[in-house]
Image 1 (cartoon, rainbow, N blue to C red):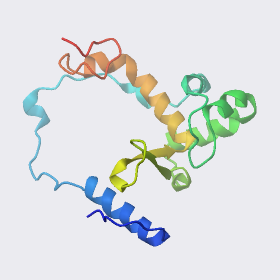
Image 2 (cartoon, one colour; image 1 turned 135 degrees about the vertical axis):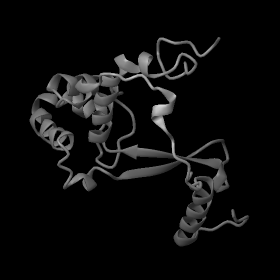
Image 3 (spheres, helix red, strand yellow; image 1 turned 120 degrees about the vertical axis):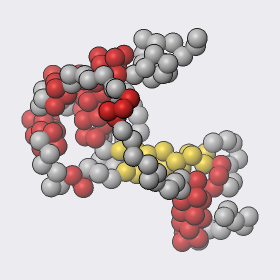
Length: 175
């Protein structure tokens, strides 16, 4: 799996990285069992407002909630760029977001890419297992996801069981 040799050849490094993370992130066999939702009597929730078009106010709220100085994605933009130039870019950005929101995904492949950076887990990292992959995604994907999470947040306490407390801000993880 992981070689115990040192290499400076690009292709050899590429193969080591690919082999290691392919093994670490291997896909498990899919279950062939069917899940019957009707039998567990799941409560119905009115979430119709999640499907309404994104407003400028929602997008600006998501942008203002973004950290200003996090690493940029493949597009090169940080949260600070969107905050500082909102008045200049808002019309173009809203056009892109509305295309996504209305499922016009013809050019989505331009936004559906990620840079993966390997960060050392410890000082003196030498083996590939000593590195952690971090994904850097496009800012438009971050903004869109943030708007959706802001919309979903008020419903979380009714959607998530009280036993699952770790993912809701108002709940304590400790019993």
